[in-house]
Image (tube, rainbow, N blue to C red; front, top):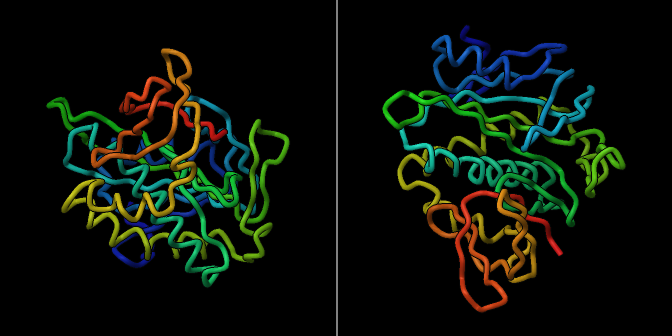
Length: 250
């Protein structure tokens, strides 16, 4: 499957309705599809987010998944959620001509004024040698509408922010922003994008709660380091790094 040209080295296949664009992209990746293919659907019937959460996916919003084949260890590949979120924030700002300036919530959310606009879901396959054989980056953007009370946190949409756009226009803008970010990541990892990411970091310098398997941890969000790890200053004054979890802003 080659897809149609999307520009900036990406290809695109589109569907009216699928169960999950991530599942479809994963199947293609496992069958050897080269990197650079976006799978987009008007509607998903079995969309999902991080931690196995279901995700509402009726028409009007962007539901897309990108196949990549980064030849890096899984820990480094995981930082692509930060890089893709940064590219999406830049694309939204450019589409709105600077009227909307999204922020980034570690590790994979894009927000506007504290409300979730978009999320990134990474799924990867191992190559059997400790590396990554393929990566599928699921990208969900609230373009025309937001879930509202259907989720336990604040949400917003591009339409609510005064930006009228189609899902295809948002995807084209993302492709333009993502290409230089991916090239920078290939050359220098997340460290190369870190300053730009921190300039948009939500909650930096503020109290947050990190929810993880060992239980919640509270502290001041001080940094996201060169490896993409979250750095919290605990009540003891100790600066502690975390590589996984979900941040809840105070």
